[in-house]
Image (cartoon, rainbow, N blue to C red; front, top):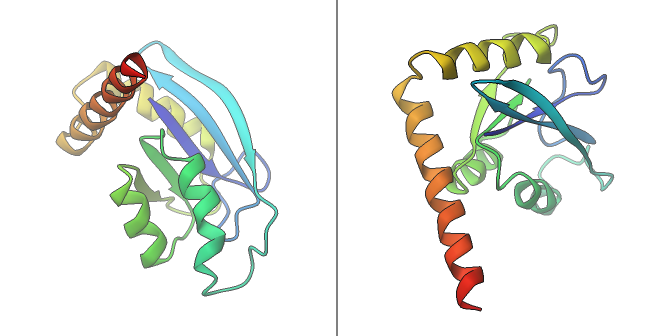
Length: 137
């Protein structure tokens, strides 16, 4: 599953979703985690109420299961959830990405909570539907 983190330093989850210029994406499985990409956004990010700034982020994160943020507005959170992406607030700006990745790997090896199992099922169904659509084109 793909997990995203809003970060300014690539170490901590320390950025508000709407203001994030960079979002790091990792692949996480029972076997471990692997850095995939840094998504970059350089629009007018600081402008509160500018809902159009979210479109590029929402599209870029559509294949992620979870996005970790330090803060997120209600509208952005609702739009992520509608796309099947679960936003999760970090406990603080000091929370480290590596700590979360380790916890996720451990959770996947054990017994994931119901919300995570459901999110994983939804993502796999979406992926299967995309493959079917591509095969018919």
